[in-house]
Image (cartoon, rainbow over all chains, first blue to last red; front, side):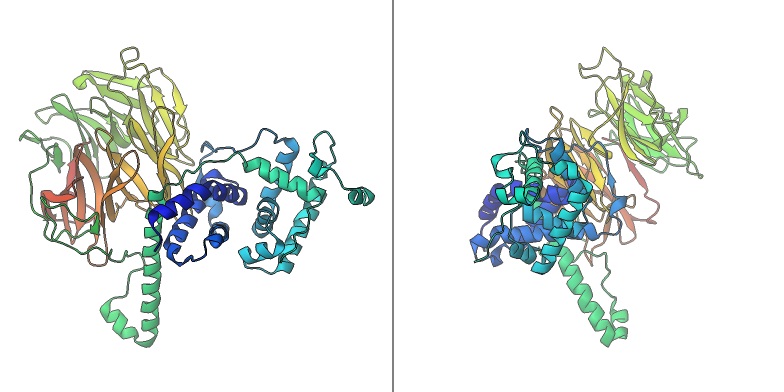
Length: 183
Length: 411
């Protein structure tokens, strides 16, 4: 069995990343810390079975996402007593603006599975196959969920997607093909 | 090899918003001790599920055998792996062990005052009969007498002043519990109307603090200074911390500056001794997530969704912790942990063969806790040492589980 020191080193290195993903999945600092703690505990229990070090990240991510899904499935979740003054630590970057906030609010309204697909695909930048493996669904379902999320995004918050040359980074500027398609 | 499809402009905008929301988050708030503690809980639950599944499967085949033998109770905690040695006051016990009280030796009586019915047994050996009260629920020393919480048969609670001769005076309505300052110089309580009263200076001064206007019920939990007269108290002033448990669970402090402020970050404060311990939220499975917070900058020293922290030792070096599912009926486990880190020192856990309920605790000194416990139809006061020692401060006596015989002095 691997030592606690080795597990602690993994925790120290990867906990912030897991917390960021958990925050995007739950929208709450307290919930994010809670699911990260449980996910790490489950990883700790199965630590000796993880034979391929390179798979640790994806394994931890899978546990984390499953924990979030478990959180969503709880029938009385809405009855949780979450104080309005809970000190939420906001990790928002300085470049974050109103357009981004609109998009974030939109993400928070997505059904849980769509939201998980969006976070894993567009934040974690996993391939559709990796998202499917993480969530235990088919690649077709990943594609359809992502497509629905984007369609809803374009329908509900088109202003947040408007081209803004002053705002956009070079990566965001439309490609010639996109211009031809009228995007 | 998997081909990665480039994002379009909308997808890139979405990715940018997600990154922008969290990329500055670099905290690692969960410690290894918290993770291993949660892992132990998960492992125990898995064992319960497996055992319950096996029991259910056996019940299908031989239902009478299960009924005769007694099925596993779904809320039972299976035995911990440590052996069950004979408890001893002298021998350091395992860090985690079953709540086995069979061979606990009898030690010295409590070094704090305690009430038994309407009789007060003072630590100095005096026995004082208190007139005009059916029983004493809570007891705090004040000068050469006491402030006590009493209740009548209808459940109406009162705070009363008890003189050294047992005479009762100054009965006033009480909501919730009595609260004391760290050194015990100040006793405070909230009334059913949200009023906040402080008694200090050996009982010579009674102060009316600003009332809590948020909806009750109310329960005072702590006083932050040894003098609540403004100007005479410390620079930080004095505050009585009061929990409310009406439509919303919130925490307020009524200060010596005649202000009432909401205490942020907690739905309930459970202990205060320089450090603040409290519950941040209650989850849908009725477990509570708790935090211990530093006084200086409000930073979170440690947190847990498995344990709550009902008490801090007089010097705030140690803390009591027990299951986050504990409610007013008491806890089935009892742990001593370090106050600032939550590192486990000693954990007693009820199991199938050893069912113990901890009703209340008080610190005898900074290294010894007194716990009023119920087990096998008996009540007793157990002394639990941070050196992992156990002995009876008040040996077990037969009693009803709804009728705890003792009220230990608040400390």
